[in-house]
Image (cartoon, rainbow, N blue to C red; front, side, top):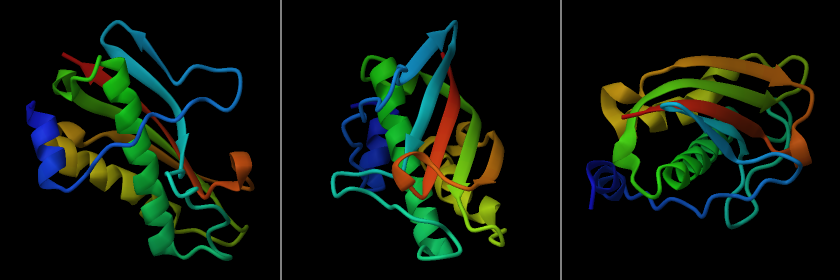
Length: 153
């Protein structure tokens, strides 16, 4: 078992099966040493977290939704690396999108649910550049979507 898999086990994390795309795109593209992962929504085996922050969804639940996105990102990266997450050298950038009401503004705090997961898993190599954007709607009404760029060894 590799270093990252050991860390996931220590954190009590089991990665999900990488979600299949719901439209005409691929889940990731490897270009040189970079893995570009398509947006991953807040879905899990139980259906996930849907709705708008500032309405039915509280900040803490939004953070949990962002963490689900992070788990799905990691599952896609693992698939891109042939199952070996030790190939990840660095998390380069995350782009977070949060389904919000017009007056909801703690968007960066919500996306922290994903950002903090990357640091927990990869340590300093998990620190990344990031965007956090509020949007009027997300696919299938999910609460959060996050895409990412990861550098490989």
